[in-house]
Every structure is written in structure tokens, then in C-alpha cells.
Amino acid sequence: MEDNSSFWDSLVFSHPICMNWKSETEGSIYHLASILFVVGFMGGSGFFGLLYIFFLLGLGFLCSSVWSWLDVCAADIFSWNFILFVICFIQFIYVTYQIRSVAFDKEFQELYNALFQPLGISLPVFRKIVLCCGGEVITLEKEHCYAMQGKTPIDKLSLLLSGRVRVTVDGEFLHYIFPLQFLDSPEWDSLRPTEDGIFQVTLTAETDCHYVAWRRKKLYLLFAKYRFISRLFSILIGNDIADKLYALNDRVSQGKGVRYDIRLPNFYHVSAPNTPKTKSADHFQNNSRQQ
Image (cartoon, rainbow, N blue to C red; front, side, top):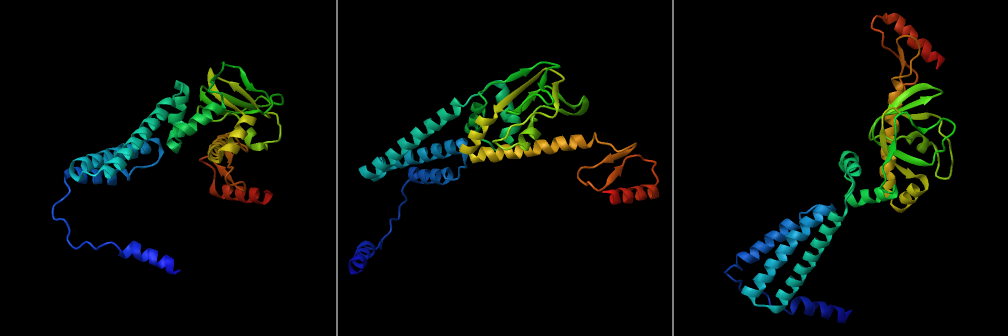
């Protein structure tokens, strides 16, 4: 303990206290370097945030190197600042190369701009998602079936890029699937990773369509490796299923002028404008008792 205390005492109190401070400033180059350091450390996250930080810090270390070479004339200060400038310069070139190397075809770039970029997904993360589907855009011609009721196995997850797909069950129309919607999100959500299933609806292309598809096994492997991507797809699929349910809600009717609302399963909404209020109230009560 005595040795430790003597070490700290010598470290803190052995140096002379500054009694006379320099009256002149260090010059404009030193202050410019300090300003660049302050502004540089205000950078954000992501690749462009790294470019911002490394660029301004590199300029700051370069200014410090010039200041130490011209004003201070200290080789050690110049050496350290110049080494740090070289490191920032190399990092800036490396990050720039990474951004430029992440390039996609037109369809995937439009998909990123429309769906993934608004959610804050970076290009490297989106690249992993694209590589999982093989970077392939599949064409589905008009009146061709993506899936047939009771026949097609559920072995992939597909996202529609262009066109319109009609969903039917036993020949009865249910709803449409539009671009940026999943073709088989309800089927995907209804199965566990180890389960197999078959489509209970028929999906037919009403126009020429283009879509991307992820195989179940490869996508689950990607989810296991990157939990963030798993949560991202969980949100996208859940939102897509909700949109399909509300589309079905507009199709479900109980008699003339009565529409069933999936948000309130114990009530019916009357859309006929001339329905008497008393009759509507009795109708609500009867339906509530039956529920």
C-alpha cells in the first residue's frame, strides 16, 4: 500500500505546477484543428456517418501535424498526429470502397428505396437479404399461377415487385396482392420452421408480374445468424398480414347492407343509409347475444 501511494504521489505531485501561462495563442492552424475535432465527433452512425467522422478527424490530425512541424517543432507530436492522419485516410478510403461496392440491379435498388431505406436499413444489411434470395427477379406471366389450392407446397417467401396477383379460394375471389406486398405471408406465419404445409388458396397473376423469393431454409439460416433481420421480416410480415385482413374485411358481408368488422367481432356495422335507428339497435343486440 505504501508503494502504491508513493507511486501515485510521485505521479500527481512530482510535476511542477504551472505558475506562468503563455500569453500568446498557438496560432490559427492549432485552433482550426481543434474545431475540426469538435465538428468531426458530431458525426452520426452508418456508412455516411463514418465517412463524415474520418474525413473531419483526418483533416484535424493533418492540421495538428502541420502545427507541430511549423510552430512547436516537436518530432513526437508531429509523428503521432501524422500517423493518426494516415489511419483516418485509410479508413475513409476503405468505407468509400465498401459503399461503392454495394450495387444492385434496378429492381432491387427500387425495392430498397421504396421499402427498406425508409426503415433505416443500411445497404450492407440489404445486401445480405439480396444475397439470400440469390439476387434473382422471377417473372410470372399473366394468368399463370404462383400457387394452387391444395397442391403447391409452402417452401418459400415471396415479395411482389410489380404487377397484380388475384387470390381465390374454391374459385371465389378474396382480394388482390399489390407491389411491395408478400405473396404468401399468411402461409409463412402459419407454419413453424420445422413444419411443412400446402397452400389453401390459389394465387393467379392478373398481369405480368415480377417477384423475388427466399427459400425457407436459407431465410431461417439468415434469421439465426442475424437477429436484426429476423425482427425486420417479422414486422414486415405482420404488417402485410394486417393489410390482407383489412382487405378481406371489405369483402365479408352478412346480408344486404351489413358488413362484418374483424376489429370488433361482436358487432356488425350497417352501411345502408335508410336503416331505422331502432331497428339497427335491435339488430346489434340480437347479434351480440348470438355471439
